[in-house]
Amino acid sequence: MSDAPAVPDSPDLVVCGDGLARPRWAASDPLLREYYDTEWGMPVRDERGVFERVSLEAFQSGLSWATILRKRPAFREAFANFAIAKGRVEELTARVGEMRDWLKNEFRTTEPDLKIELLPTDASSVVMEKEPQGRLINLLLALPHGAIEFSREIPGLVETSTNLASIKKIEGNRLFIATSQRSSVDSAKDYICASVAACFRLAGCTVEHSDGYPGWAPNPESPILDVTVEAYRRLFCTRPVVRAIHAGLECGLFLEKYPRLDMVSFGPTIRGAHSPEERISIETVQKFWELLLAVLENAPMA
Image 1 (tube, rainbow, N blue to C red):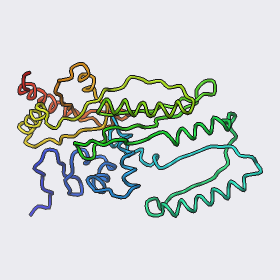
Image 2: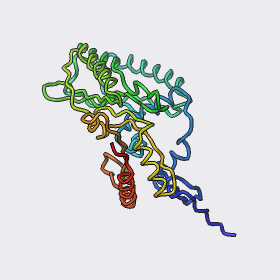
Image 3: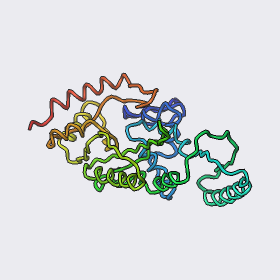
Image 4: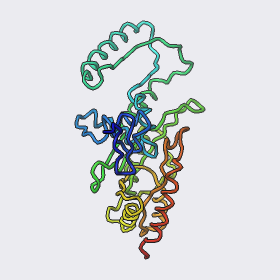
């Protein structure tokens, strides 16, 4: 009797060194393997866990999931530099100690290693005055952030989101605050853009909008989707996993010009998208080409 692991029937599964079969995307990267083994497909029901997942999903838009997992620890870290009168240092130390105690108690289950430290640092040459500081803090508290609306047709799919991207100091002691709004529904994107802009204007800021991707709502009854699924099944003897993702795709640009166009989006496997590690799986290029030809041969004519 051989102790060799059985070869899985599906070409999309790989037998790993521990003898367990995993999807190709989770077979080589240790971080993705750990995620697949301990979290992927597992229900998350507690409020903090759901909030973390929604936040990670929102930031994932257009990026590989491996990139987000590598940055995951940074989502739990925050730093702030501030100035205080020398005579109030003891008062501040006591207040921070009180805050540390109740936060560690509140998060004792979900963040048992929570650390809050108060450390001296070099004095900054620029300090924000009290009035604009108050307006900035009120703005950040008022700004919507994260998932705003979920799809009514596809459970768990984020339909509309808004994210605070960055706050940077620019020339003239001014702040440049960038946000990002996405939605598969144009009217929903327009609404959240207006909502975010209103917060900035109430804070006395100047607002500018840049071009973005138009919405592309998923169509589960798409004829070309059926053709693509069947072509994939015939070519590779397995049914593909069809997903709708919350990201900007060029399909929305085509749909803006041709509103009745029926579309699907597929391509070779890309790892580390939008990062210095971005690369393409060469073996999947041939697979993509064969599927493209099969879809074109069987696509319904208008």
